[in-house]
Image (tube, rainbow, N blue to C red; front, side, top):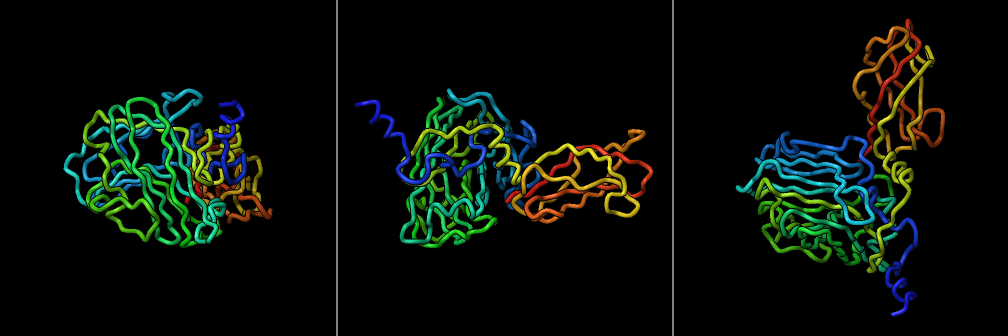
Length: 354
């Protein structure tokens, strides 16, 4: 086989050559919230509630468990060509599985980024998902595309071994139900690794159809069957058409800017006194990029006010997604009542996740 033929076999058969990957941060290089997340599941689960815990940027653990607990970390154990992976470790086993229990790794997509698949039209396209994974023991798990807009779903099983392997799954086109063309949640991508009969008691739904809960993750093993269980994943790519292509590595700064659309941790320093508010100090400052929608904003630790350097808790005003005095930017304004001090500094988290 010629080198030209080998190269052609790796190229996508539809869509653009760059910007192919719909998944943001699929190699887990960005982790603004931290690099280790422990005791996930302690907030409830099973019949008492559920937990959604954001970990590496754009990825969360969504689970409802009565007993099982896990931790997530940004790991340097990777296949060649990657620097980071996401590692899930079971810390408390759960071998008595309630009907409504579940555990899944999840990323979410707004409709604006899914129009390329032409879902709901006669020209609907296939989806190719690829990723690298390994575990401490062989297991079978499921991956699901869940169309939120039309309540339709499709799932595929995959096998994980103790060695890094690349999984390639091709999901069929769907001529029913278009994705909304807006900045709201349109689709979830779920890696299912634990479930009770509510979500796994039926027959796996391998073609698109109206959601049947029992068919979403049928036939999988449980990552909570032992405290020794681990799962590593990296190189996640979802692209147009039936051909997988090599993982699209992009510059770190590009991935970080994409993540900032949904979440940012920012240092703030202001020397503007009485900037627009009577008897207060602080001023407006922009988020790194325009955010998906109006963000929520929260202090990360304490702020300091100067002169003096004493701790203070500002009030934070977050404007709309169209920004303040600017047609495309999002602005945040921390301020403190009174004007005895004229400098404020600290770190702010802004969140516009789906």
